[in-house]
Length: 408
Image 1 (cartoon, rainbow, N blue to C red):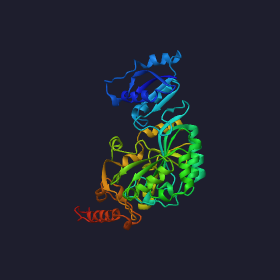
Image 2: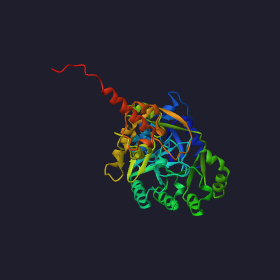
Image 3: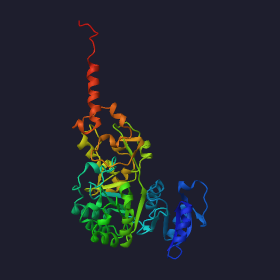
Image 4: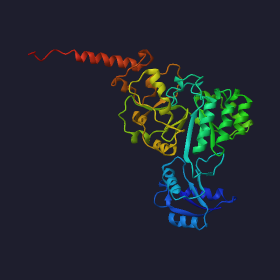
């Protein structure tokens, strides 16, 4: 198979090295499709050609396809893939040499499907370690709130018919709380055979997890992503021993000492600025038959239920069972209403578990509560309730002004 390469030129050198003993032979570099990461000047040891020469070579049968060497979640990929589809380029393969798909590094796209570079789904909403400021709001959910197995099966099956999913992470909450986690893992691999599948966990349950789940993780080619919270790091040697002895691949973040919180108490933010600092901007989230822009948009309804925040945004979910799904999913690359409620700057807080979550735990500027009135169902549940009452009292006091106009 003879291909052209495009993307970030230094990546192409890694791709060429990795393909030396394969049946894929890189022949050219498409100079029209150079990632902005590389700037205007680039060097490659492949002959450069323009895109239309590449198309003619494809039509003549001298080339069989193209490999795009770049971050699968980056802007470059979103610009290039529609063009390749527009011109019916066969054998489009993507690879990110910095963060390769650990199951199948060369990911061949299906021209008839949408492409979702990254997707998440909560299997369990609750957690055994309730972190203050958790972006999945786990401290507000119960451990019995789960993604029902048959709903998960139906949704993943439907998704496999619609889209190529490059990376799919199953998380929570804490997914290892599920006694039948192995069934979820087999469903995901059955319907997404070439997807890079991951489990995200705080790792605390790994030393005691059942053998059937460990076997399912290995047999279904899952990678375990371990979040290195302080309690996790204390037992990391045990975690390492269990996973290594069972032949399970894993990655870990290192020690996590701080969280970034970024919500606002109002909708007056500029989305382009808020999204520029957002870690979740590319994190599509699957939940009960819909895909959301991010987990915050999908799950923050629990803030409303818990604290009664007035005029909070309605989540923007794309129905995966809609006939026009392929056109709708692209809309999530832009702004949704939630983006206006994400602050233009974040606040760093020390990592802390909590059994008494407060609304301001998620705010980039908790002092905003002094200036904005909220309808809090239970004022004692949050400091925000105090500020709401204080603001109301100040307003009443302000309205009690002397009469300065005489009646006629």
